[in-house]
Image 1 (cartoon, rainbow, N blue to C red):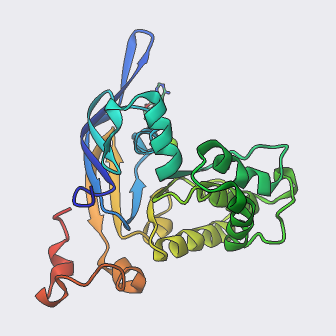
Image 2 (image 1 turned 60 degrees about the vertical axis):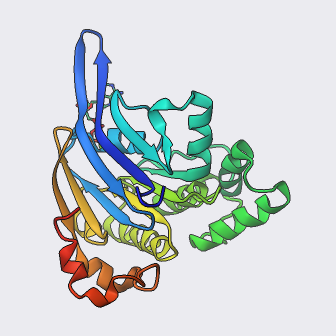
Length: 261
Ligand SMILES: Nc1ncnc2c1ncn2[C@@H]1O[C@H](COP(=O)(O)OP(=O)(O)O)[C@@H](O)[C@H]1O
Ligand SMILES: [Mg+2]
């Protein structure tokens, strides 16, 4: 599975049936996301970004084409197996946070642990507190979502997304509802999670946010129209020590990868 990446999509098509009208939201997307990558997806409104994220996030199935997530063929899984893959492999962060309103930050983070059962019961509470501390909310554990600022809510949502220790963290415009300064802080959190080895796929309208990614994929009308590898983002540091042992001596490996993706 690692040779094919944690996500491997081939000729992915998603058509929404709206009564008599078909909306082709994705029109033949092929994309491989290696484990450990920080990928940004950009594109105008309606270009299919969320649709692609929902497919990668196993929230929906493709109309046609192949989608492998962590080696499993999403289109062929039963709903139960799909939910299991989603619960164990994927953490999802949304623009609107989507926290459960009347339970504490801690309980919001505990909830997915209870649903999936991958983390032993005896460790859940400690883990949830630790995750909240990791996102800078150690002092807000018992707060309700409506007692938190937007940035703090998104931090809870990120801690919740990490609850079951997913390999893949998906974020659909996670800074879209935040002011610039708060958005920067959230972005820094994603960069830190990436440095720790997490695979991150982030949808954004903000070129500054996208510039933190190693690769930027642009969608227009459900098609990938541009792939931009950002060697500078890699050199800036994050992955040099992680699995970069081979091919270092070849020289120009960095430039060589441009366009090949
Ligand atoms: N559940 C749905 N039912 C019908 N059409 C949808 C649905 N979700 C998205 N679409 C349509 O699919 C296209 C892509 O939408 P979306 O993936 O949300 O784009 P983006 O996230 O890039 O703004 C749009 O034309 C949108 O109206
Ligand atoms: Mg969207």
